[in-house]
Length: 523
Image (cartoon, rainbow, N blue to C red; front, side, top):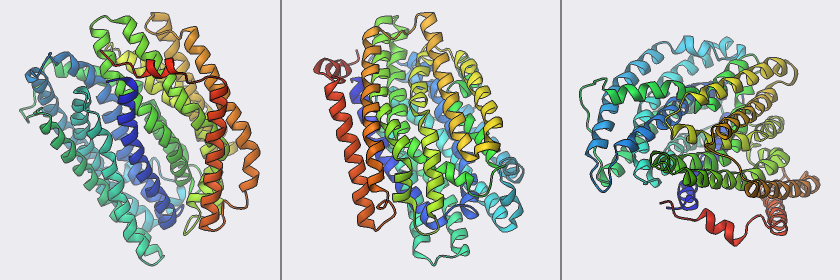
């Protein structure tokens, strides 16, 4: 399959999931508002979700896929790969059960490290946060096992099932929120809704595991539960995972840092950041995760066959496609972020002031959006070579910059500092990753690609100038009636789209040769 087709499959289904997630967050804003129960829910949900992204989707998948591909043989002989996957499951399951049980027992002390002073002082909502955290934490167990199955399916070039699985999470959460929306607007209703949300999280994890298991069996691949044994292959996987936690999961580690600093900020800050991150996650998930997922198996095959030119071509195509899709999104969200938060979030328990603060945080986050995507695109080049150590060093440098900026900026500009510091840290990570790849001769941006990237940036900049002058015309409509809001946001989106397309056409960003190159089938 071509890179464009793989990314289209993964990105398309991810977009459906992100749209459901967006509906979920709109309902969260209206039903729970900002502060109190909303902060308690965000804290309870963030813990298993960050661990999932950090260890399961990040470190585990990055280390597992290259090793798994080594066990794949030509044709339909999957016995060696099935044996390896079964050995991994046998060791992974008891580790997850013990870790989950310990975290649930220690939940009050774990949350103490990240909760704000207001939440800790609010006895009722504090107890609610601990209860919700315990109910939601089994989600990590189910999703870690689901990641094993999903990584197996991706390695078999069956990307659709894993990309569609997160839709089930959002459907479960929307169902819980729909119940809350139908009840009277009261603190008791919000607390009951929070508990239903926690149950929905764990149920969704189980449903995703069953969904992926069905498609794996349909593909003819079987993973069996065996007695745990630390075989040579399992030991090698463990050695690769430890540094990959940092290399592939820098974004999630920064989220833990964010939680720590959020505990020092006023009530509502954790909700502002979570709501703003939805707009950042939309393109990041559709583009960055889709590209990273699509190129890792192909890069692993090219590297194992010593096909350096093919690996270079694939990496160049991924970088170009990432910037073509990401730069316009980042520029548009930087300028129109507050418009989107006002149109979609204001109402119910979420005030205009809440939306304006959230919009400001969106602008800070999307400064780093291209960098977050490029990290997803560049790190597979290391993982394909079974090098999970080098990204540790780049991630460590990025985190040092992020923490230093947080210490300096948080007392001065509040929650916005977390967005800006994370964005700058991500760009540091990208610069270091590319410099090392370039120095080792693994990847170098050719002048032709650099000229294309420059034209993409100029097209996005031209669109940004047009949006800057167009925004004042919609100011009075962004918080008007439903019809006025819809008209204003559709108008802004059309202005941005048309201006980018015209600028891209004038600068010949996409021509026939480029499209054919991106659609070239992977051998």
